[in-house]
Length: 565
Image (cartoon, rainbow, N blue to C red):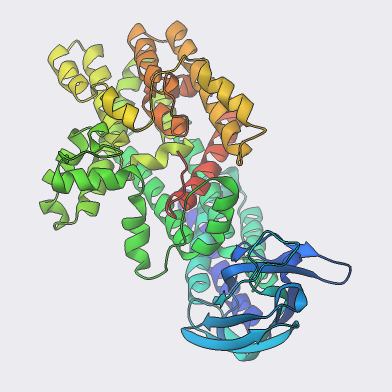
């Protein structure tokens, strides 16, 4: 009977996917003919613009001299753009040119606002990217250098258009993820209801593309929703009962989790201009990633950011003897040493070698952590511990070119060995967790501070920091891990509580606040406490949902170079 239900479920998925693809073809066959005012309704994909403004008649926005506009998911075909443009204040002349679809268009001198018509072909990606380059002028009443004034933009398809390739590829994948989520719930026992919900989602998916066509990139949000939904159901049930084949099941979970992060990374790179605008509102740094060589970027290159570049340099060239403003000696040698040893396995690519070490170390850490916790607290708590480690929003650093995964496996090995009184193994693992070189940390503007300084700074900067929501998250992490560590001291065997304290001392006494969510990753006993007290289903479901949503967002920001931890 269960086999029959599974066959019916996947048959419903196949039928829904076929219906969605047919509906997509109809949606994109309908001629596109829309208008919107850039100053009031422009999508997140625009860069190089000042804040929107309005007068009694129109809304508008000024460029900063170089700007780009992205019309996402308009379809593959030919289109006519009608853009109202003019010089600052409508009378100051500026010189302008546009680049679209690989062609340069000289717009000449822009002064009085009028509509400029540009014909463009959007090929398989289905997006129209328009880059504007203008001279700037400064008005007497202004302190800004103003480029061109942008008002209304119109889009009109010429002839038939087709659904873009990324949308066609992603649609069955999204439906499969949503179907997999349904397979994990009681809806599997109610086949008619499950099929109806799937059909409803399969209809809403292409209609969502139709409503956002040319305005909002719907694909990233649908993909994120599907990954979170499938991930919540899978992880919820993974931590609900003991594992029969721990190594195989943890490996399968690790691969599914990693594939989901790769998918979110690919979405983040493909819609980099949209993510860039979002990242600017939430954090700092970042860049717009080109779409060329997307597989290499999404699977490898984009996962080497910030400290990862230092580790790669050390693996290739060692520690420089010359004076450095930010010395590489602050980075421990074991991870780059193993990266260098892995170079032959990676075909000489230091990027692949660094990521290979991270992935192998994390998988080993998860398997050993399950065995360690299962022996002390039971198999169900052990499974939940693995889940909570993976859903923590900063867990993406475990599979980036960072040393966190190596640190985690060394920590788990040390705990595992101490619980079994294998002191030589515990000592060897502990040797790899030596304290940082504080002299180098001073050069990185990092020094010791009293433990109350960091939370007070977080509270004080919530109202003054340009990204207050980031400070609030950091404060919540600080309070949560302090509380979890106190519980570990009272409720867990002494080795767990003391380990949590020792691993929280460096980040909690540090003057460098920005990396707190990443630095607490090694406070492994805190995740054990979470697993012990997550007995109620709604608590576990809420934690998994929130963690995965933040993890997906952090992944898209990280692959575009934004600082997330």
